[in-house]
Length: 410
Image (cartoon, rainbow, N blue to C red; front, side, top):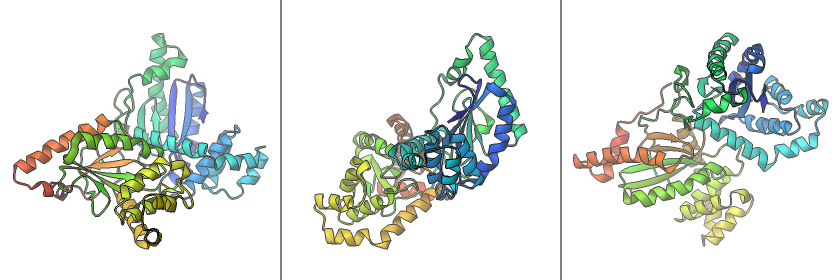
């Protein structure tokens, strides 16, 4: 959804959460500043519901559904005014002239879930660790701002854009011109495109890519030997399409690095994926019978079919002891493990999926293999130096984590 014309000279992409009080606070000042510049500014809204905000995802889906009937902004304003509560939305939708049944059907559709997933992934790539988060003609800005601050930002970006127009670039091509060669950023605090922006710095509470954080393996499922020189701790969600996408990359990395690489799986089920949690339990229950990765593959291969008795069906296909599987699936210990993973991810700023810590270094999103290899190669070289210095291979990961940061800077 957008406000303003396609050929606006300044494009503000907003990542927001309807339950976030700071996002609500950000609405009026941004609207006021954008209105002051008329057709020179457009605002594009993207959904970035945060973990722990139980109302945010249903609200996001309902606003997406309203967008299908041309009433996104009206519902957007109503949701912020009502703190993401859907109570009485039917009556409001009726007053807007919306088809209420279609609204509900669209909100419950796979298309709505995919739209939220896509926006969430885009936010992760742009460096959003919280909300509200903005990308203005390719430059990153975090947090709510007053109208005066927004006017100064817009004025600066407008001057740059007008310079392009003076050089002969058509208004409708200004944004594309600015975005040519734009960096595909996955949360490293750099600007998305154009000159560096001081406001593009990483927000407090977000992991820095060059730091090592104490994110360990514990007793979680793993591929690769205990004495691998590089350990990737992956936070994943069985319903997340981007987690599924990155699995092929991880498989390729195992082939490239062999015994030097270990991949550890931790669960990070997102609120807007209702089957992610039961799928995680099914995988951990299978793990108790030595079949985690086989169950892992089945779950990802049939993401759209995850529901009801599918988990027991998969267990039967894998030849598991079904009585034991049922008992393990219901065991509160599995829920404790999942919750422990969620808290660890939250502690170190891994708010979306997939997220990775490579010997403790953060990498966000379903990135191409070269992004992984760049970090792995650096860590592998450092690990080999430790081995050359007398550290046993089996103690390398522990040695690295011993000096790692125990929390993200606040």
